Amino acid sequence: MRLRKTCTIGCLLAWAALAQTDGGLRAKVAAVHYPPLAEAARVQGDVPLEVNSGVVTLVSGHPLLAEVAIENAKTLGSIEGQTKFDITYHLVIVDTNAYKVPTVTTVKRGNALERAISRVLELKTEKVVHDIRCVENPAPASDVKTDGGALEIWVYGRDICLQTQTATLSASR
Image (cartoon, rainbow, N blue to C red; front, side, top):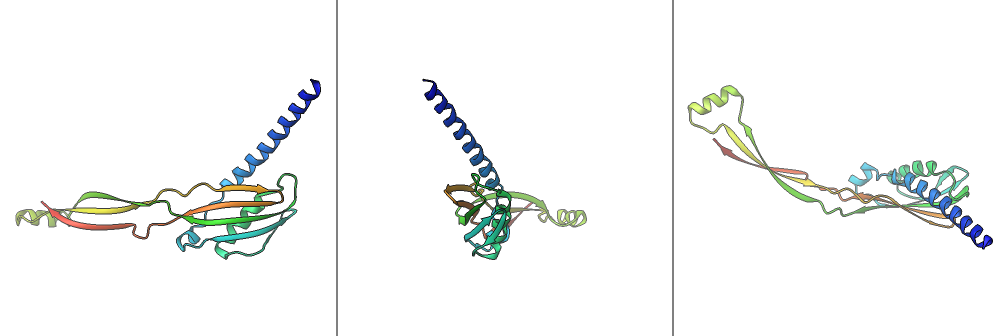
């Protein structure tokens, strides 16, 4: 009975230590964001790195993506007590289902003098602007998967709306 209790407590402590390490790793990975320039250029791909005692070596990868991967890898430190491990950053652009929202605003035409003259001549003094704005959903959160000495980190960027705003005008009094 005592052996069983000791084993159970030992397993729970090991599980808690592993969960804390995994949680700390997840927090560090959650801080990684897709590089804005790479997202705008729609650059995606893998960036494999080798880490040995805190020294990060780039194996391959696009330069726009490599900088973010290297900076994040430097913050990771040791993983599960290992100082030498491989990391692969998968930077992927995903469709975030951007949608268009129509908006209507009324704006005054010209300055005060021009509007006064327009009223005398019975011309319209306001215009209605119909806008269509593109609203984008945020990208999914970064994720991490560990497999022994290898670490895979998934960083997601969003598909950016190319048409951010259009407008049509119509006049009113």
